Length: 628
Image 1 (tube, one colour):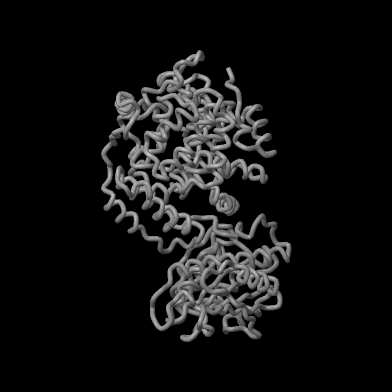
Image 2: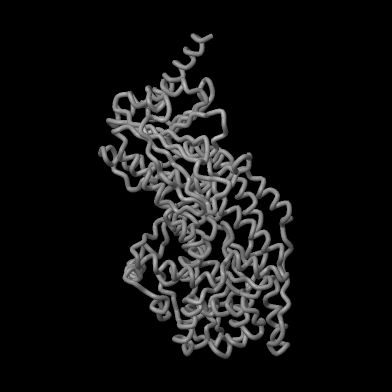
């Protein structure tokens, strides 16, 4: 029986060795239990040897990495590491093994402790891994501990037989890290989920930093970041979570659900009442049963994702979709405004001050209704806008054939345009200055649709439907696109600033008609323009979304001034807070470069305007005359 097992192991190792020499990824179950995962040959390996007690965090930290070994049989460790290290040393000159484990008890925690004490992290390394050990220790100590702070203690001897055996292999370095199981309640099997996730993230990052320091000290590879050493392949569990979340998120459209279908009739009624009282808005029936959708949303299993970064992104998205479902279910109820506030945030004093400053500067610039029918410039109706949209989409399709957009002319929308997934919706009542058409199409097609299609090519639907909180930066980019296209007029900037003021009024409990009169009297909006703006803000019971346009623009301008790149923002729909995550995922090879770029960046004028923005710019500096 022993000979048969040995033969199986020998055959298994030969297959693994050949895959490594051929630069093929490996994800194989060990003959006697466990798994070897290597998505590319690297000069390190994380290992975890199962014990009789549950060590959930140590196991999770290990399998979060691009190269790891899990085993329940200690005798399997050495043959695997001998085979791997021989190939890695041949390729890189040296090899680092990091073993994670959990200590038997939380020795600093006592029943009578008057405060939460620090927790122990025990480290040991071979002499040739001292730089890795020191980097790991520094990273752990510098981590943001929300509950208990780590205390790193160095061991003088190998903590296990396996560490000792690995340390004698030629050119093989060893780092052992064991920590107190603070994520488990003392004397019970209960888990503290938030503490568990924080501990995994901290130890995972510290481990990658240790690997990067080891690699740099030996000149093995040139690294842009320690996070570039992470995974370069999605496991099946990630794809299942992605599909599960997307199926629910794509089953409804928040803006369509909360946008009135009787805007024209409501305006006429409001006008006939001498612009007094609350307009009566009607909404389309919901296409989903919210309770069932929430059940499906929280039945999506996040087990076995093995990637802390993606785990966090999907958890954030799950919480956002939950809020969106609560929002649409509470249309015209008192709670609607609070769900909107939770999704889009309040109007911060600094944001309101910026909006007031813009309006104070531009309030004498004429009516802020760019649909002004009295204008001497030619007007564009819905058919004209549709033709121009088709022409712009055709240019994008020549660059990338998969840029397939459905254009719909709709009776049930207020004047203007809206994007939902791959569709461009145009209200049949649309009537605007023709010089506004191209900038507005740059907004809708060049940003919203472009990021949808680029996100679709990333392999995960999350990047096309949007990471949690993406809308602020997305709308900031879209408004900036209007500037790059030469279409940031006085009227347009006044409209964006007035939306912030109207949102602040609404959140403060100011009635619809008072906000309407403020827009007309203080900021010289036409009756029709003021009504449309107030409708957007008061729809559903009060939606704070329209404040994000100016907020996102300010974030973008600050990002550019700091020297930030625009490239990651074209890869999909992301928030400003995800910029670093996108850079990491791109460095790991998990994201593709954009399949298509905005047309407004292909012109000399667009590039010149972008360069001016990089020098430092406020929204008021973006105002352009209406160009012919």
